[in-house]
Length: 202
Image (cartoon, rainbow, N blue to C red; front, side, top):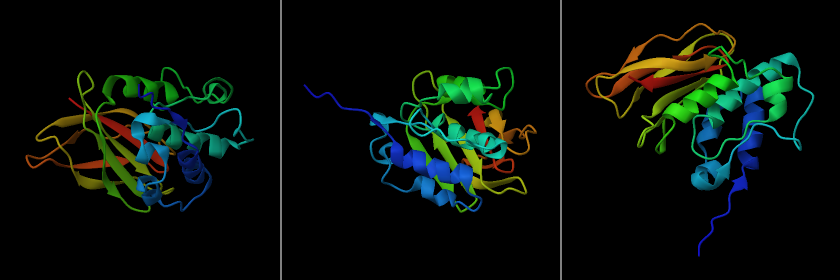
C-alpha cells in the first residue's frame, strides 16, 4: 500500500525568509523548482517559521512576514501557521482583512485546484488557483516594490467575471479595487507596496 510521506518545505521557507528580510529579492525565485511545494505540491507542509527557525525579528520584518503567509495560504500544500506569529506577534489581526486570520478564511473558502503561475518579474508575482468542487479558485498578487502599488495584466481562466479582493495587506492597507476579466480572460490585478492581495471570482 502506497503511503506518501509529507515533508516540511525548508527550501520554500528559506526563499520566503529572503522575501521578508531583503529588499530587492526577485519574485521569479518563487516560481522556480526545487522546493517541495513546486515539485510535490500535495506532499508539501509549507511554513513561514516554527520553533526551530524562529528569530528575533524587528517590527518591519514581522510586518513583512505577512507576505510569506499570503503565499503559503494561497498555494497548494498543507500550510502551517506558527502559534507565536498568530498570538505573540499579533499577526492574526482577527476582525480585519489584513492578517493571517483572513488569509486562513480565504484559503478555506477559495483555494482549490491546481496552482498556475500567470506572471513573474523581480517585483510582481501573479498566480491563479483553478478551483475545484466547492472551492471556486482565486487570483493572488504579490508586490515586492516598497514604494508603489504594482501588478500585471494576465491571462486567467475566467471570462467576463468580476473579482473582489477578499484579503490584502502590506505597507499600504488600502482596499484594492474591484477587477473584471475581459471576454478573452485577461485581467489587471494589483497589490500594494511590499504587499499582497487575494481576489475571488464572484
